[in-house]
Length: 325
Image (cartoon, rainbow, N blue to C red; front, side):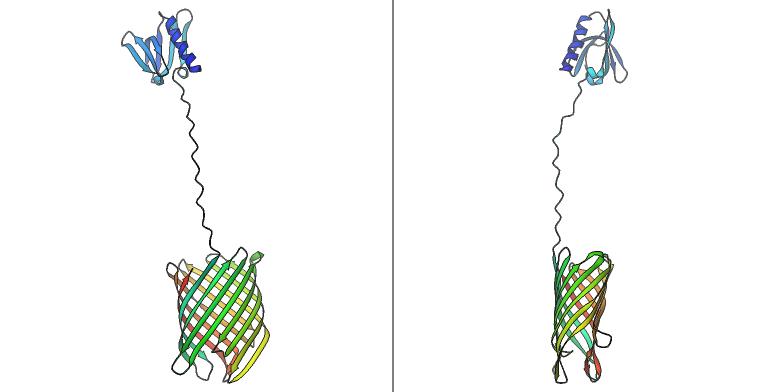
């Protein structure tokens, strides 16, 4: 409505000032003198003595000066000449929701096949042989609780005798405490032909500390106590033992590069005189996707198993292919 009034005013002034000169001043500085004939929202129709009647685009005009003999000159600015285009409101673009992040699974695990070159002593002579082992574990991880089930079976024999027959089933429960501490309970069932154990049960309770816990380096230790029950047969004599035991665990995992990890573990069960410890160390290298090559040295020593005045030990160099899921 305001624009229509302005256009009407300009046209009316141009009509009543027949004998006055009008001036068009362009935005580029040019000036044109003549008479305004008509104006609309886009054009000003102007008559000059030099060019005749012309049509001028209102966006090019800076101002119009309308001459009136009685009152002088009226200046109409560009804002009153050219239409002011108001921005057309655009519909708001729908904001795409962020892509849903897949929640990591609480379940994981691994399974492997292993070949070992072993060296053990249960007699006066050291014995070297080769064994095959299948093993794996399944893990469930909650916010502060973790459950882990492990299983291992290895076997070897020759034309004369069984060389190795070993079964281990382990369940671990881990609860994360504040300050990097954790509580852990472990239940173990085991049969070991070389240690002359028919049935072995171990229940432990431990308190541990994660001293370092980064993606590249992890180091933790734990101490606690357990109750140990086993049946052992040595030189044809069977014994049954049940007694409390002290336990100490230590673990290191160091990622050297993205595909290569160094690991080391130590478990000590018993005291300084009568004990069973297992030490292992090695490298794990990613081959393709979720398949890994694992090289490991393992030392297993049990002072409670005596044959010809020698405590049992088992040294092994292990090579395995491991699949993680």
